[in-house]
Every structure is written in structure tokens, then in C-alpha cells.
Length: 181
Image 1 (cartoon, helix red, strand yellow):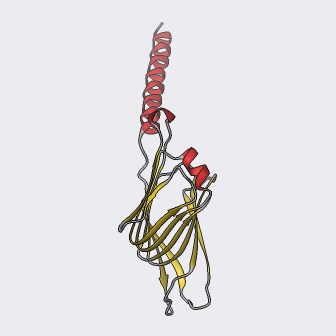
Image 2: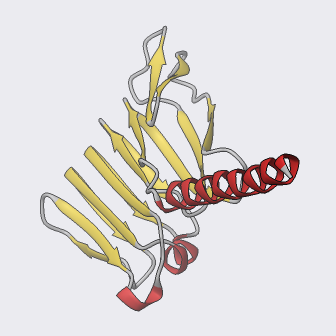
Image 3: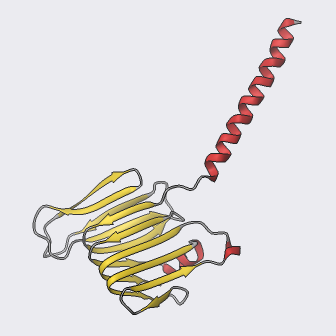
């Protein structure tokens, strides 16, 4: 008789622990992940959202007048991408691939940001916004509205009933932000 009681108690305890684990997992799945925050010193940044297992990846292509290496420092959700070494007036071409539906902020101190496949982004992301302090924001996609006045802006917000996740926010101190088809 005592063995059966311990058995029932073990079953009830296991059930309660399983219930607590499921509740914890559900709470974790509802938490909003902190957006990635990229801080880039200069260059031409080519941004593309792709399906992948990790948050992002970056690479760079050297340009003739720039001998610097491009390095990255990551601390939690903050990613600093910068030129290190030899003189580099304009910066390298930086290719930044970001996980689909991820929320992120990209800050560029000066240069060009080209966001490719923006038609697809409009169908996937909840919000897209860009501010260029000294320069211009352009878009080949009619859903992303731009203003030509300093500071130049580009904006898109999905309808509430579309239930999308992910936001892209871009800040460029001087240069261009282009949303390409």
C-alpha cells in the first residue's frame, strides 16, 4: 500500500513538474527577443534578410582605396562593425545577412545602406523605418514611403490584422539609404 501511494505521489509530482516546465516554455516563447543593434562606422552596407539558423553573418569586400580590415565586436544584442588598421577614407563594402523576421537596428556613421529584396520585406516585417540626417532615403517599393527633406525618411507599417513580427530601423548620419526591389 505504501508503494502505491509513493507511486501516485511520484506521478502527481512528475505531472506538476511537467506542467510547470510547459508553462515556463510557453512564457519564454512569448517573450520578445531584444533586437540586434548594429553600429557600423562607414562604408557601403548591403543588407539582406535570409533564412538561416543564426542571427546574422557579415563579410566584406575590399575596395581599392581602403586597406583596413573590417572587424566585429559583439556584446549581447549589440554588434559593432568597424574598420581597423590602414587609412580608409570611404570604407569597405560590407555584406550583412540577417535572419528572416528578426528585429534589428542598423546605425551607420556615414556611407550607403542598400536593402535588397525590399518587396519581400514588406510582406514579412511589421515595420520598416529609416532616417538619414545628411543625405537621402530612396525606395523602389511603393509601399515604403519616402520624404526628400532633411532629415530624409522612409517608412512602412503593416496593417494590424496582418500579425507580423520583426522590425527594421535604420539610422544614417550622412549618405544614402536605398530600399531595392
